[in-house]
Image 1: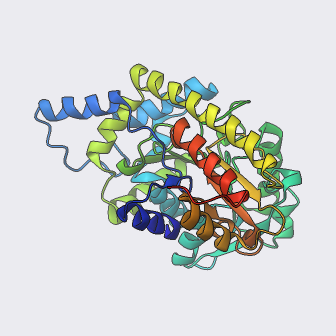
Image 2: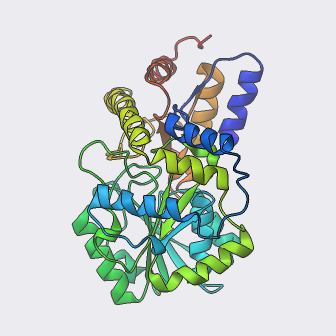
Image 3: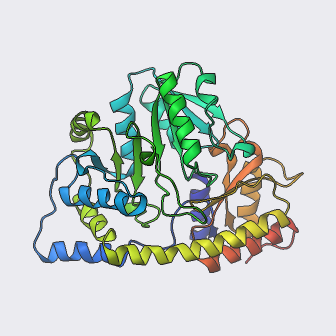
Length: 374
C-alpha cells in the first residue's frame, strides 16, 4: 500500500506509472453482474439488510460453483457469504480459536494473515517455505511448529502463485488431523490457473474451512464480497459472529455476485484468463533474462515472485528506485517474508497486456541503467 500511495503521488504530478504492485484485475465486474444490480434497482428493490449468512440464492449459486468446478455436492447451508475474504478470515479465526491460539502461516505469504491474527490476540507461527517445495508448507512442518492449533494455507498462493495438488493437500490434511490442528484453505485465486486446475481442499475433506472471493477471478475487488464453506457445526456460531460484527454482507454486492455466477458472467470472466495467460508468458520469459533468480512457478493467481539479480541491494530500495526512475511499481518482498524478503520482489501481471509489456520494457531499461521513462 505504501508503494501504491507513492505511485499515486507520481501520477498526480503527471507521471505515467505502470502498476505491477497490487493484485487489481484490469477488468471491472462482469457485465452480467452490473445488469443484475440494474435490474434489482429497476424493480424497486431497496437492497436493505439480508441474513447474516447471505441471501439464499447466492449461497445456492456458490454451492453450484463447486459442483461445476470440482464435482462436489456442497450443501448450500454450509456456505457463508462474507464482506470480502477479509471478513471471512476474521470470522474463521474468531469462530475457531481462543485468544493465544497458535496458527501456522507460510512465509512468504499474504501479510494480512499475520496482521489479522495479531489484531485478534492470536499467534502467527512462521513456517519458512522454500522453492524446492514450491513455497508451500509440507506435512513435517506441522509437528515441527510445536503445538499448532491451526494451519492456514493458500492455493494458488499470494505472492508466489504456487498450488497444492491433491496428494499435497491429502498429506497436509492428515498431518493436521494427527496434530489436532484445524486446516484453513485460502482459495480466493481459484479459476486463475495456467496448467492443471486448482484442487479444492473440499475434494479431500469436509473437515476444513475454505475461503473464496469474487475479487480476483470475477474482478470484483471493490465490491467486497466473498464466502466460506465450513463444517455444518460451525455455521450457527459464524452466523452469530457475522450478525454482530458485520450485520450482513453488502446486499447490492450479493445481487451483483449472483449475476457474475450466471452463464453470461462465467463466459465473460473465462475470456479474461487469456489476457493473464499472455502476461504470464511475457513475465516468465523476461525475468530470467534480466537476472532475476529463484522464480516461483506461478501456477496460478497473477503474480511472479523472485529474488533480485545479484548486486541490486535490498528490495525496498530497488522498488523505490524503479518507481522513481522508470515509473514502474513493484512490491518489496518484505511484505510477504519479514525475514528473507529483503532480497525478493513480487510482480503483479493483473493489468492489461499492453501495460505489462510497457512495464517489462521499462524494467529492462532500468536494469540496463538507461534514461528514465517519460
